[in-house]
Length: 550
Image 1 (cartoon, rainbow, N blue to C red):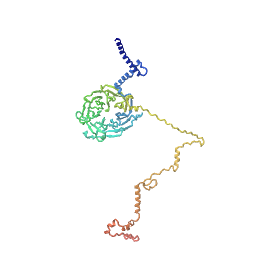
Image 2 (spheres, helix red, strand yellow):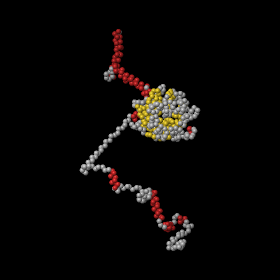
Image 3 (cartoon, one colour):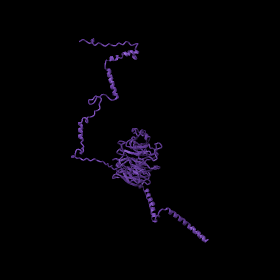
Image 4 (cartoon, rainbow, N blue to C red):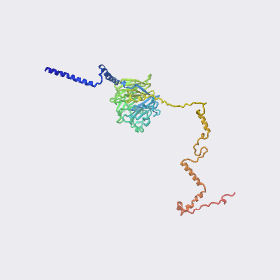
């Protein structure tokens, strides 16, 4: 029994070892080549997996890595500040406008090393351009200026529609067909491609449609102060889903209306959003449609929660603002709030400030331009920052590793080389002492040829000039070449022929035929008409009794 048990125990112990050995042999069969040394196995695993994961996590968690600022591309707009800037949804075109009244279209795909715009115009004559916006489809551009008219242009700059000007003598702005004061801001509806919004200094926000924008607006929104008096909206915007119409007014209030209802009463209202009497230059909704960022003329940047709009979630001050168009926006990942500052006394470089949306701590501050930073566009599709500066330059910041297309296409182009053309020239050897049969003819001067041609009567004869009505150069005109002139000429000849001869004979030559075949007048007066008696011709030889004798 003991021997059997010992044998059984032995078999039980050795069975797993045999299975493990078979497994090891099967694993070894799958591995091709010699095994990796144990000293290098750990280091290779760390380099491939651990280190890369840590570096990627650090890059993802570092907000400064989200900012594309490795390189920049400068576009010369003009000598005046750039106060309007917009990019199409595809990121291939850019529209800029400034205080020099000029609107320029830029195309990154067709741009060469010269970096020139493909279209330049003055749509509002002598009015500075305050804002431009691309529609959600990218086929239209909305431009507003210091005038009371807004224009809708196509992708190539051709005018599609123009809003009318209202009657400035009417007290009720509800009854006017359009704005009566300078338009300060504009926005396209994010869902409806034909609807856009404008706000002006006449105390109204107006909603338009492209098809009937030339006649009048669809709706008129009138912001009110606390006492019921009108206030001027300085910035307007739609929410991301298009259900809210928002306006920031000069009395410091922030007012919102429901787009699906009448615009009589506000659905959200904050009276003391910014300092009273200052112009809120920008108001933008976040991509998740839960927050609103406002850039005030009181040198503050505030973040609001749409669900609780009573007080700001975060506020930062000390951001000098000199223009009524200074932008603020959210980053494409909705984690940063960006704005620019104007130059204060003693400053020479404009700054771009980045704040965390959660804590509102300053993440980065970039010196980007030698002038004010006014307009900012962070394109979510191509991941590039486009800036409109006070020095008249549009700058595009990008990172070749994180950005796509856009300015990278223009920056990567090189200057085209001039083509070398090979031309074979026949060299002429002048040999004045050579024989006439071997001597090459020398080219004569054109002056001698002209003088010789003038002496030739055939070559120097000038062609005859066309004749006028009465003739030209001693030649008498035979008549015109038109049908009317021919008819008049022939009628004149016939009339002249009829006038020649005795008129009495011309009438009596038809008397015999009329008496034999009466057809018109004679049958009607046959019974009542007396006998016709014609005067006989007088004898020329007999003297006239009426003449007195001398």
